[in-house]
Image (cartoon, rainbow, N blue to C red; front, top):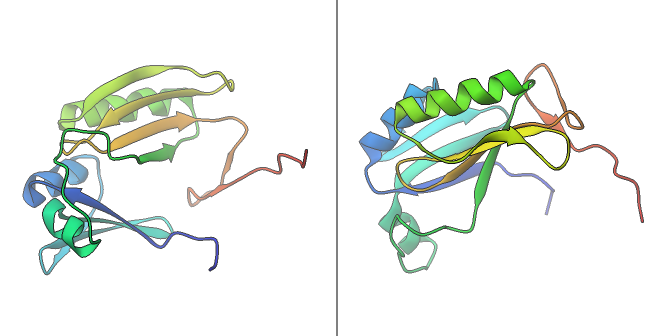
Length: 144
């Protein structure tokens, strides 16, 4: 298996509301067969009905209020961008669960959850280089 992620699918309780939320963040979506697709750099973020996604994965639906065991991250180039994006998400309907602050690694980050409870960390990490296209390359941390 090649080390890459092609697509991330978020199970949502209201597809129209979820699409509107991400479009309020500035993303451009396309709906095909009750599924919304957003190009996100080199991968795709997909929104699909939570129950249909659970069944498609052979899992039981646990509801939109609990932690789903996944956090998405969006790295930016400055602390000011973190503040700006957290506020944009709040205005779009997100709940800020961790206000932006200095991190233990010398960066700056905050977290919001979208209307379906998916956690997004918005982070500036001076140790992670972002290319012009927004792609992130993990630095060489060295071997123990």
